[in-house]
Length: 497
Ligand SMILES: *Cc1c(COP(=O)(O)O)cnc(C)c1O
Image 1 (tube, rainbow, N blue to C red):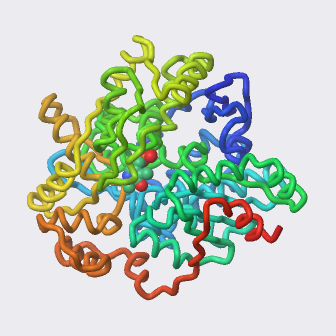
Image 2: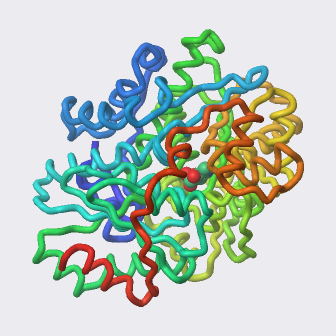
Image 3: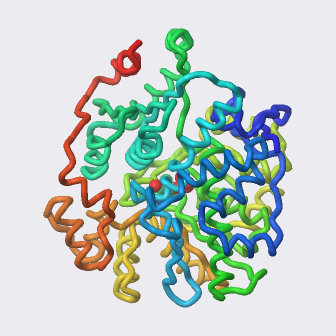
């Protein structure tokens, strides 16, 4: 299996090269040259494996330059109860008649990004070895909260790597800040920037492309890499849990082999739902892919009209990980839907960066409508959904998952479609404790973060994840706060250059 760039179909690299490079030199994203197929019998057989082996099975179709031993080294290290609080890794909870919650948040940082960021470091170091990249890999991350912590946990103490995370001093939740300041590991660094997320992000991007920095890194045997969701190494682990969930439903007798399911995904950067699309085209029987957004509903409009327009007001919501106006992974979907037309992708994404807007062809719009449905809801609806689900089923979900539940309920009401449905549950309710508690109790309260966590535990009867329970007692290790202008010097100094 080779990988092409969405902006140049002539580019042809191995998976090890795609994963170490992250993004193609032409600015395009790496895409496998074909989608490997799984027969129904293969999918059924996956249900009899433990999660790490399910993952290895799917990876063997995509990472064909990896040996079996290399793939198992990655999966066994990433998907074990050492890192996940659930034996099944991705837990399938039966919510109500024919609806299942795919809980992707039993990892070390309590959000679904762990599913990919626990394995990415192993993919990256294995890939580097395979292409004889005899250098130390330094991961630079700008984060608005979830990605930074998940990347820190993934890369901590992984040999041959180090990681440095920048976050906006006043732009993350108190819990997220504490999670990062108390990070353990001998190869990690965390620093706050006096500025907003864009300042952090722009600083990191500028350092990546700085010629002087590049020269100094080369002299010191170091390369930079990125852990963000445009890397194929972050997308491929997400395909696994959809195959896994389907196999599980068959095994549990909830569906018959071959029955179709719907999949609902609370969406931001379009990575998670794109993985569901890949699973479908590998052979998982799927009826509709339902794309759920918060009030930053650029994707709802796109799927319903074929016009992508980021020129609109940006809102900060109670589901902050979906507060995104540019969904990078959409580029991969459109590349596939145009029959791998790199010229048209260059045109549309050129327009997106120049004018903030593009419109797809009638043919692509028809394909979008055939496979996807889309909807959105606001913060009030998100909170009332958390409340309603709790009252009705005694199940507590986080704000992002609640957006998906609300959009699914609307879909079911509008269409009468009763196909069994899997909803991706992307974060532990404890992670967004303020909004979740407000929703459960129907009023806001001014007790501190830890008291809120305890109160949610009383109401939900869910165990507090060990990683969050420990937080109170952990010493703070990282208290640096710097001006954005000093980011480059900070990186060089931290690397000992
Ligand atoms: C990142 C994130 C999302 C959005 O996922 P995408 O792959 O970016 O679409 C949804 N929910 C939570 C909790 C997240 O952290």
